[in-house]
Length: 252
Image (cartoon, rainbow, N blue to C red):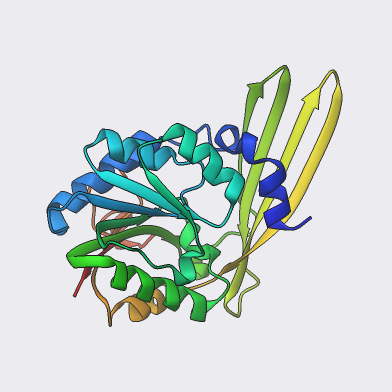
């Protein structure tokens, strides 16, 4: 089953799949970074916004917020969650806005949904064009050189008399510009289990390579993947640099 088909079929379960994510904390963390490194504006766009939970929190923080995604069922849910926001069906690799914004976010490693390095660079260029002077582009990323193919994240949840088990993990073969996110969803009801498995092809990049792609467009700050504290990447763990980071990019 393709990734689009999976997400279309299970769009009503997307929030359940992400129920362990603290959207509010993530949104507040990026808001703090925007106050430090941004232009002070309140126009916000969330790339790959899904069902709109981050948009909801940015609106509550005082932003004029909106989002885009390639999945219409997700956007339908987002519009119900945030009726005051503007959402559009667009590919983040080549999007355009009628009005420029001050802050662009891309959460949950969705920057990797670009089909390849060329599409990733197109996404970066689109974000640069869409930002006002001094605007900020914030996203999280995983370094392909640090991926542990044996590691995975697993959690369960109850919904409508069913028990769901979600498991996901990164995989990188060790060369090339493609990695994958392997996803498994099991639904058990009345002792009957249905299971979906899918592999999402995603762009693979090292952080030095990503910095080089960003450099013509942005002044780049890299922080540890921590939405509660602002910690420069590599400042902890005895200077050893982790494989997950927040990229905070100011338009130049």
